[in-house]
Image (cartoon, rainbow, N blue to C red):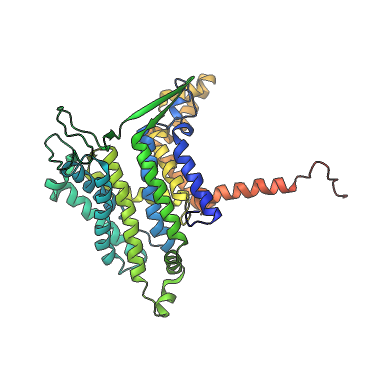
Length: 403
C-alpha cells in the first residue's frame, strides 16, 4: 500500500498511531499526583516533539544515507522560520502560505550553500557548513536587523498588511487584538480538553497540523530511502571514490540530497513560526545544529524511526526532566533517614534541573559505546532477546529432551 512493502507500511502505521495517540500516551499519570510532573502531553511540548522530529528526519536523509555530517542545518531552520513569519505578516495569518514559502526559501538557501560546501568532503565539509551557519546567525542578529528584528526577534503585529486575510480565512485584527496563526479560521492554539476521572488529555489543533506534516515527511523519507536515488546515496556513503572511478558524477545526487534535507529543516522552521509567531536569531545558533546531530545519533543514524525517537528523548529531557529541582528530590527521598536523604539529594541533584545536559551527555556516551546503532539497535537487541527466550521455552505438551 502507498508504494511501500509490508515492513515499511507497518513502520508508517506505527508512527502514525504514535502521533495520533500521543496526547493520551504522553499523559499516563493522573493530574495532581506526584508523578504528574512527568506528563508530557502539553500542546507546546508535543508540537516540539513532532517539529524537531521532522528536522531530525531531514538531517538523517543527508547524514544517514551519505555519511556527510553537516553542522549548519540550523541556518535552514532559522531561514524557514523567518520566511514563514514574513508570510504571516505580509500575506495571511493562515499557516499554509507560511509552511510552503518557508520550505521553498530553505531549499533555495541550501542549494547555494550546498553548491559550495559539497566541493569538499569529510571534516572540511562539516567546517564549511558550520561556517555558513554562523555567518547566517551573525547576519540575522545584527546586519539584517530590518528584516530579522535583530536580537529582539520578529513577531506579528496589528499593522501588518496581510493582503489575503479574507480569502484564506485568517483574522484581520479588526477587533484590536493581534490575530493568531490559523488554518482557515481555526487558530493553532485552539484546544479541547477531555477529562476521565483524574486524567486530563488535551487535543490541540496546532499539534494536529504538525502531526499530519510529520507523517507526510516520514512517508516521503521512506520513499527516498527505498528509491534508486536513495540507493545511489548509499553507494556514495559506501565508497564515493570508487563510484567516481566508474565515470559517474555523484555531485548532482549529493546536491539534491542536501537540498531535500535543507527543505525538511525549512519545513520544521516554518511550523515553529506557525505555532509560536515569534522568531529570533537563536534558532540559527550552532547549538541548534549540534542538537539535531545528537537526536540522530541517539535514535540511530541511517534508520527511519531513529531520529524521531532521538528528537522525542532530547526534547523530553529538556522540557520535563530539567524541571526537577532540589525540593522535588527531597520529597522523593523523604522516606529515608535525614542523613541518607541529604546524601542522595547531593548525589542526584547535579544530574537534574540545570544539570540535565550532564545526564544527556552520559546517555550519549553510553549509546555511542554500547549501542552504536542508537535506540533502534537497543530495541532490536531486546526483541531478539525475548524472541530467543520464547523459542527456548518448551511447549505445554512437549517432553523435555533426555540429558
